[in-house]
Length: 221
Image 1 (tube, rainbow, N blue to C red):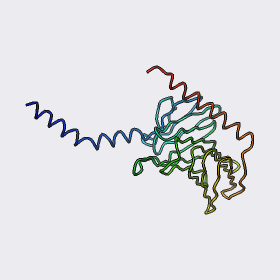
Image 2: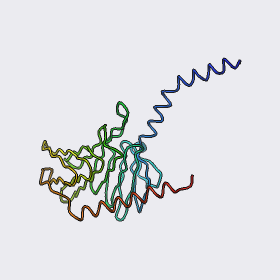
Image 3: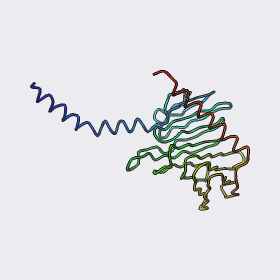
Image 4: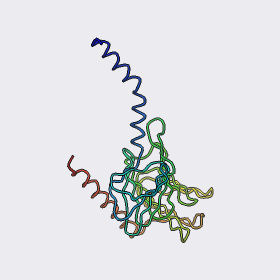
């Protein structure tokens, strides 16, 4: 085959396979990757219908469910989008994770019970939502915390940066930076400002994330 024909064939295949390669790359990016796993954390994988222990650098995607036991926690990274922290005794379902137009990721996490922190790289332009019982929270900032005590049937939504809009049974409340919206038995209970304990918990998370980022950066390539 002449050099011209070889070059033509390569160019044609590159153009023909380009969309498939791009789609595959996007699909690979739309996964939560475990940056740090401490203690016993399990993952139910929807695709294989199996529950296995989660290890560092493994991934979870749409339909998967992650559970942390006592004294266990995990930090996930959604590439180019967010860090997500599951505290001890927490269960979260990735109920929606898909590409969104024009260039973004649509994400919905369902907090079955426990404590969840979402730290976004920037204010989202595509939906990022957290469901906890009947409480639906949509993030319009970059740092959100949701706590669900399933036994007491209470949900607390804490806005650390920007604002978040909550909706439960048609009752809409917006929390601004420093505010907490609390629900009991699915109904709105109150809105108030952080306690010192809440601030201390968030400072602890920020330090944890800093350690994870520093460790990843200093790892040999």
